Amino acid sequence: MSKNYDFRNVRMLVVDDCKFMRNILERMLETLGVGYIRTATDGIDAWDLLYNDDFDILLTDWEMEPEDGPTFVHRVRQDPDSPSRYIPVIMLTGYTEKTKVTSARDFGITEFLAKPVAARSLHARLLNIIENPRPFVRTATFFGPCRRRLNLPTFDGIDRRASSEDALLI
Image 1 (cartoon, rainbow, N blue to C red):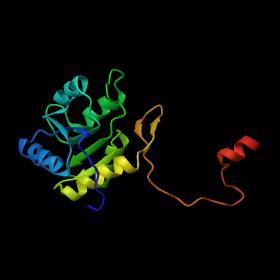
Image 2 (image 1 turned 180 degrees about the vertical axis):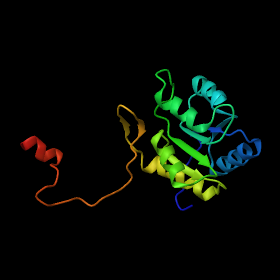
Image 3 (image 1 turned 90 degrees about the vertical axis):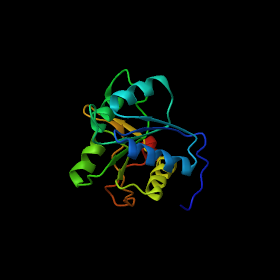
Image 4 (image 1 turned 135 degrees about the horizontal axis):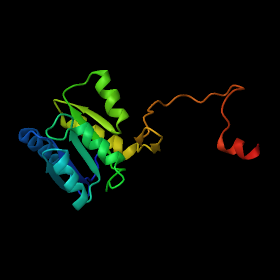
């Protein structure tokens, strides 16, 4: 963990139906210096906490009952009454097949974290949220952080897109 941040003012909501996992995540976040941590057992409890408190980052498990992580995140992103549509979301799961990762990206998560969780991996996700904030995108079928992560080299050929400066000259 090369970069040291002061996380004392970071407010985290941890959502997991497994008490053991909630405790582990809470201890990891405390060790990283996160100053305010609340926990919920599922998306329904978490929704109530989001309405009654302000959080900076949401860490949620995928599989929970009665409301799972995907349903909860979809509601956070899409519900017009959502109090936290722009909150960064770290999705936690033991299932890391490409279809799961793609699905999570498509319902609006910010970061993906595989179980078993290591403090170093959790720290890396927190740093990425802080150092590389992603703009939010709204389309007819999606609202959430931009799903593109590729940093492609610029194209200098005749067919390159105009820069904003070029566009002003046209």
